[in-house]
Every structure is written in C-alpha cells, then in structure tokens.
Image 1 (spheres, rainbow, N blue to C red):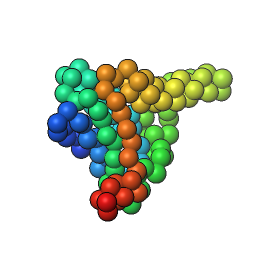
Image 2: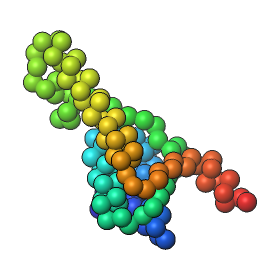
Image 3: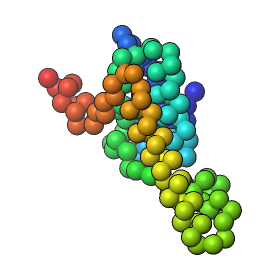
Image 4: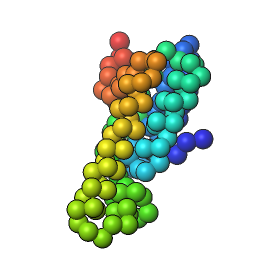
Length: 127
C-alpha cells in the first residue's frame, strides 16, 4: 500500500516500519507524503493510542535521499523562480514543509509516538 512504510495495528499500538532497507531507508519524496498521511489516518480513526516507528535493515535511516533535491520534486523546481532570492525563499519554504510533515502531525496526533532504534529492538529481544 505504501512505498516507504509497512503499517500494522495490534492492541491499539500502531507499528510504522520503514521498509526500504536496500536503500538504507532514505527519505525519498514519497516518505514526506506517506508518513503524515499514515499519522492522520491513525489519528482520525482513533485506531491506536501509540505509534512505534521502527525500520528494517542495517540502518534506521540514512537521512534525506538526494532525489528530493533533483528531478521533478518540489525542492528541485525552484518554484519556477529565476531570481536567486526567490529560489532561496522557495527552498526555505519547502524545507519547512518537509519538517512540518513530521513534526506538526505527530504533535497534533491524539496518540503518543516513539522511535525505536535497531539497537533498542535487539536489546529487547535479548532480555
């Protein structure tokens, strides 16, 4: 259903798992639309009281994928501006939008959100 995430809900706990381990779970353009949509849906349906975010593979996430800054994504278009000041303004607004897509939705969500690292998951399994 999602390009970047697997979502499951058990006993009112949502498990949102990054599912692109071969690409180090980098944050591609789809990441920025899918994560807020997932959180909004869980919140709207009141299907979970908590959200656990985890990942697959060796790394939790290698950060922003360079494709976000190239090709047809919003950051690469400069908003059609030709003047350097307007291009920079467009970049600033796009970065804010990316930040808000995670922070605003998780802070407005009625449930609690946690992020577990691979090390924490390994520690849980060993105890």
